[in-house]
Image 1 (tube, rainbow, N blue to C red):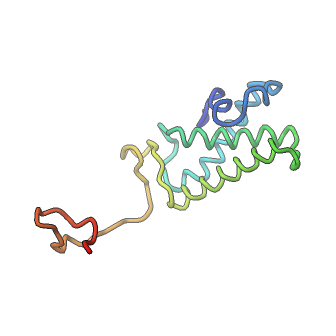
Image 2: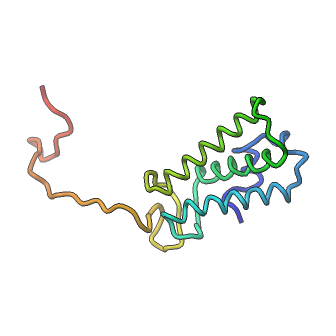
Image 3: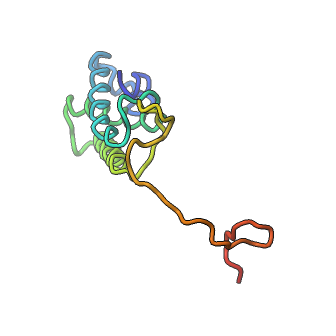
Length: 146
């Protein structure tokens, strides 16, 4: 199982015409390899396996799988299309790094049973109680008056 489908690969990663000569078996293996790579990052913040995930996770998987397929075919650094695929791959890697470092929370349901979007580790935020700064109606100030 992967984080995107064959349809997602074509909708979010690469046009179908660009990979029409690549077997669906090979495309599926690229999706599975990309998903395994993603688990290496996602596992630092979420309990694997993920049960549900959003479009952002699907898109990053499709971008990584696209790169895997095109790199296997042969990569031309002077080709505009190949440079775009490289840029999409690099962006996906940066996105995954931010998630792994706890700098970006994503909407997923992990295996912890704690619900959607909850991290299994990370920072704890604590705040002091109210200091009584309220307007005449009892609400907190949202801006300064000049």
